Each structure stands twice: as C-alpha cells, then as structure tokens.
Length: 317
Ligand SMILES: *[C@@H]1O[C@H](CO)[C@@H](O)[C@H](O)[C@H]1NC(C)=O
Ligand SMILES: *[C@@H]1O[C@H](CO)[C@@H](O)[C@H](O)[C@H]1NC(C)=O
Image (cartoon, rainbow, N blue to C red; front, side, top):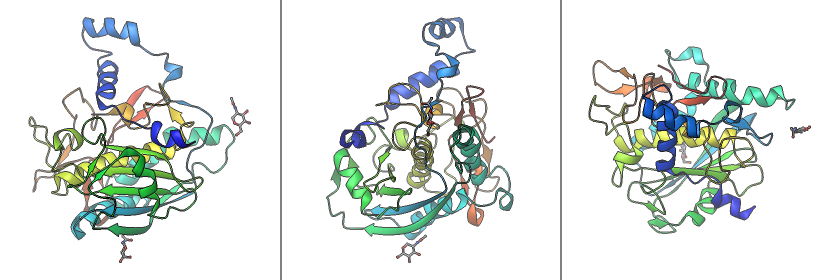
C-alpha cells in the first residue's frame, strides 16, 4: 500500500481546529448550536474501531535524530518515552503513564473485547537511537522521503520508527498543514512517526499552547521547540498505536482522519475552548505549565484524548 504510506495521515490543522470548534461549541451559543444541528455526527460514528490492526504487546521505539539535537534535548524525549509504560504509582499524579493507560483503557481494551487477545498488555520502550547530524538527505525533506528516512532507525516488527527533525530542517507541509505525521513503516507490521522541532519555524502553530499569551503557558522543560515536539510526538504516537495502518480507530475520511489525540487538538486541560488550552498545573518555582509528571522529576504537557464513550476529550487535569 505505497500510496497509503503518504496518504493516510495528513493532518490538516485548520480542518481539525474547525471540527474541534464545532465539538467544543456543542453546548455554546445558539449560532453554534445551529451549526451543530447541521453537522453533528452520529455518536456511534465517533472514532469507531474499524476492526483492523492496532499496535500491542511490546512496542519498541527506535529514534533517528535528524540534524543537531543537544544532549539535553535528547533527554527530554528519552525521559518521555521511558515514562510512558512505567508503573503509574512511581510518579506523582497526574502522570505520563496515566496518560498512556488512558489509551489502553479507551481504545486497546475495545480491541480485546472483540476477541483480539493481548491488546491491553502493551508496553512502549526506547529500543535504540541513531543520529544523522549532517542531514544526509539535506535540510529540506519531501513527504515521500519520510518513511524511508524513518526506517533507517531500524524499527523492529510491531514497533515504531521515530524520525525527529531538528529546528533547521524543513519538511514539506511542516508548519503549513502539519506538525507531524505517522503511517505504515517500511518493516512489515511496523509504523513510523515523524515530528519536528518547530522553534525556529512556527512555534505559534506547532508549539502551541506555549505561545499562548493569556494566561501565559511556559514550557515545562524550558525548551519551546522540544516541549512542543513532545506534544506532537504524544499525539502521533497515540495515532500510530491505535490506527497504525488506517483500519484501527479513526473518524471521518480515511485519508484525513481524526484519531485519538488529533480529535482533541487544542485541548490540554478541563475547560479548554478554541484559543485556550484549559486548566493546567503550574510549577510554583518556574511558572511552567504542565499536566503530567514523568521520569527524573520531569514534567510534560500532553494532549487530551478523545473518549469515544462519552464523546468528550479526556484530560488529566
Ligand atoms: C473483525 O475481525 C475478526 C477477525 O480479527 C473477524 O472474526 C470479525 O468477523 C470481524 N468483524 C467485523 C464486523 O468485520
Ligand atoms: C542512544 O545511542 C547512544 C549511542 O549508541 C547511546 O550511548 C545512548 O545510551 C542511547 N540513548 C538511549 C536513551 O538509549
């Protein structure tokens, strides 16, 4: 399915934000209500399971660092990945493993319920990492180069090849219509995820809400680009696990689907509305905003996940 690799998971942020606005205005003004009457989807159609493949069991993630990342920047990502499948008890709530277990509870448990065993026993871990500091394919990538480039991270079967592009690397459509992408990997049964550091190119789009002014949202690891990258990484990873090959959990067009996290774009805490990320926790010392604790005392801001049962965005705070 060659076309699938590039066709499935194109994110049109504008479309997503528009749909989000419709979803979140459901209880809003009369004008919005009228819109909802026109467009409100059948609740049974919301992020339906299409009876296909999800990633489950052990999910090894191998990284290709494309371009220059500092050791401190790499640690932000490595600690996030190491936190996902840790025991929820070892970090203060709310935590990164709680966010991950929401994916299991809201999505993977349904796969098990239709008789596909073992889906709830999933574990994400960092299995390897490679660097291409000199950018062997140049600093301007096309979408069609992404899957093969990600594959140089040598993904294992059933795993995820994670391509991370540095802040001086341009990718077709990056910042214009997408902050990341995922799709079927080169190795059978694997998936790829690409996300970029947007600090130098479009933090207002791809590191939002850290550019939100009122109230200010300060990046929890002190790195606008990397804290924004983690948001998009979390979002694409949720999609790659629950809809790796375009026949898992999605809603709408198969070519431009809404998935577990993209269906809640712009929502980070309770009470979010378009242009406002919602309630977040604030570090009293640094003033940083976060909603999840992770390894080594780190904090992260993670996206809400769509709850297909309640048709609402589930938030950690
Ligand atoms: C879903 O897939 C299973 C096999 O994995 C099959 O037995 C079942 O009939 C499928 N259900 C639908 C509604 O297609
Ligand atoms: C990444 O790879 C380098 C070099 O192989 C290794 O020293 C380092 O421990 C790896 N980092 C992680 C988090 O696996």
